[in-house]
Length: 113
Image 1 (cartoon, one colour):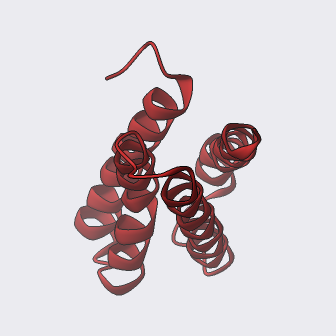
Image 2 (cartoon, one colour):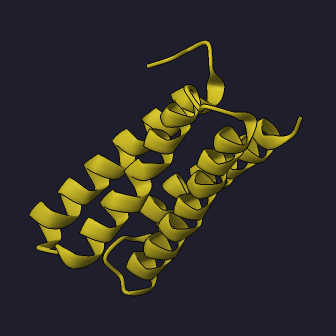
């Protein structure tokens, strides 16, 4: 995607992972409710980060990143729920979970003046 902006690139790659995980959950596990929630929140992070690029003001920019952090937190919740309910195994969870923290760290840094 965008190699010049690490947050945009990372959020896009994370969204791709979420799309693939949700597709797997639906095809292999016939799980549609939780995966739909995960898909919505997990892809919203990147969409908000990309939207922030053309923010109308500094406060609009910060608001977009703040909402992206909320979506990040919600995504973390759905992943934990999928893990604890045994839809995804430990290997899958441990593979994607660090990406959430990394996105959160990037977003925090991007918000600082």
